[in-house]
Length: 371
Image 1: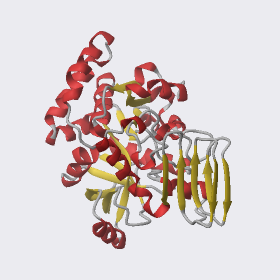
Image 2 (image 1 turned 45 degrees about the vertical axis):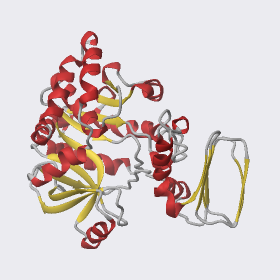
Image 3 (image 1 turned 90 degrees about the horizontal axis):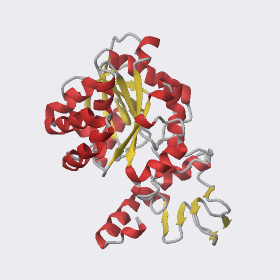
Image 4 (image 1 turned 45 degrees about the horizontal axis):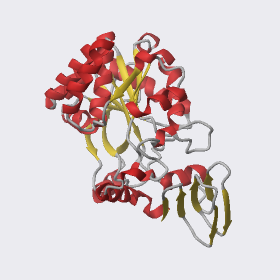
């Protein structure tokens, strides 16, 4: 495994605005740039610190938007300039991860890459590393490997991995065949999966040889891969990179890697999963943050904000403040208050997932200045 891990390269796609965390998370300050757990580190920095012992600091690539380059580099001073990949506009995860794979394949034809979201929380770092090390072994054997998490509720925001028989892969003793992969099922289907017990949540960790990943993506999206490989051919020459990005990037297909790779790879029998025996949270909404900050104690009030002045009497939930206002909460349970200089959100943890609809409404109304 030591020899195999030397071929491993970590990729961190740092994109998206985290619309369910508006108005804290915005286009110019997305959630991965925030410390949402009270650890003293942003989610991005936490992701880097988990991955550095696996691949080494010199073998971590970050794919992010041009507008976020300065903030990313300030948080990750160890990041090599050659490993900063800038998107001119968001094109979803297939383009981001696929471009990283294409660039790294040209640099190292036998490279194994692992893609890890920039905005997830994992406290059991040792358990995480055990699972990823097994996934790298499965990838070396030619599989596209995922890391799965045991579901705790019928969530509809995740992909579901239907686990099959154990696999005989050296170095990956926990690997299971993937029977099917379903991205974001409806609530009734998610409940059925939970009751079945044979399904895992997709933790947005894709580990594969770069050539295998691109080969799979090419089957159903050949034009996308052609564009990515053309970009990769120009990438390491500053004289050709800019013109290539301006010409090719706007025309790339916008599709999540769950649809371009995971679902078709499962149908083709090319997908393996490593069940993760560690805690995991995608910090998808304010209810998640409230739970993380309170340690799961439902009768507590979590508070985020430097110098926050919050008075509470029989109140629970979460307050996030970026203002100097005094916030007083009396007799309210599971409340969410997010107070910023130009926007105020008030909801409950039960309805936290619906914050995205507010963002959609603001987009339609042209109120981009608060997004």
